Length: 220
Length: 349
Image (cartoon, rainbow over all chains, first blue to last red):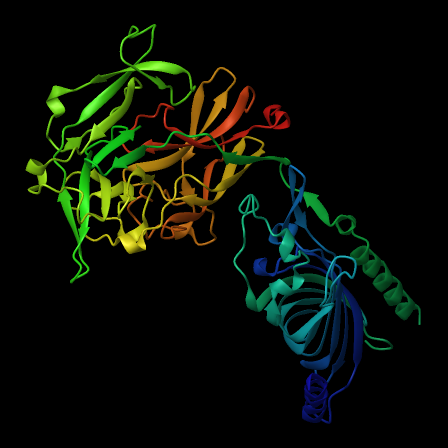
């Protein structure tokens, strides 16, 4: 279903492009820092991305984006209490995650050497749990939306630097799926030594700040 | 081509930076200090006791401690065979406090009886407190020399009958202010051969005089188990299935050092709950308020005595849960219900 949506959006964008526009292909890496929504229980961390955009006109581009990150979960969201004889220990249990976002993206830019832009995308997020820590469920995925903007500075012919801020929206995100702690080890003796967090299931807004480079192969 | 190579090289560097993160190496992070646990079990306690003699309908009770604003009273309970309603009749008997005397403090006269604590033979002198005669109520006492109290002595003049034992279903000692809502603390169903020990405790939601139904009585005293945990400066003792305190009494916990000096930890509270309104609520009124968290008809399912910042446990040897009459001062001196030793490892903090 999601794949059909992505293909549909791409075809729609191509069909809507003016026939006279000069079409140029832009590609570039993006390195950013993502502050995940506090309710997700995912610690902030770096995120690598790659954008591939096709200019349909001087102001409108359409393409694909891809994000990759390896954050860790915040263990204080997932406490465990282990008792051995008369000794009880408390732990904050975290796990490394592999997060991949991919989406069809559209961007509107003012054009020029200093070009503010706004963009958005629709796609999917896919969170892979650590098989050495997590039990049962291994992958979480659902629809992701991206909305943001920034500034593009052209540094030479065919090369530019981009600063962007985006809200990467995870739909239907359930933090309980990240919990690696078996119910047997839920804190009982000291249930609030690690303050318990209310459950979260819903839409998570993750703020992504990035520095990107854009190249136009053979272009100007 | 050169630009594409540069792009790919830059991408690879960024990917490596994202993938190689030191934080990923540890998944179990210890939080705070380790906790040392200890079981907290039953103690040989001296809760109020009583016996009934139906020959004269006499109640002989012990350890009836003074309660602020309340007095002990004896009642006869009769059940109307037609309406099935219990009728409570006050027993206006003579109150006799019996003081314990031994050869050191009271001479050698009196009746030799076994000391209820040590078992040694002591001599007991009956002392009648004239001021208490025929008032029908007894204020209780914290005087340790009071061995027992004889109350509710029946007579034909008191109840208007020459056969005082006939038609009586139960004998009750209540505690309250006499306004009609006194709670039962001692109970015995008499029946045909009703002589014997009375039961001390909280009799659930039907223990209010004039509303009680003997068929519903569930008895019990003390009981319950606990687990103490000492973590850093925090002491937390969790209890399960404690008996509800009798009317006029409440539980609290102390730590006692090797010299016998007790330090109050806290009054018994309900167990932790993520819902703040029912978390660690004081159970001071668990005797009369059945709506408090964790209160069942005759028991407290989950409860806790806790001090998050008690300080050092050095020198402390025992945790003690006591049953105290309401109005008792801060000093340690209640009836010991449960106790547990503090592990040496915990006292190192």
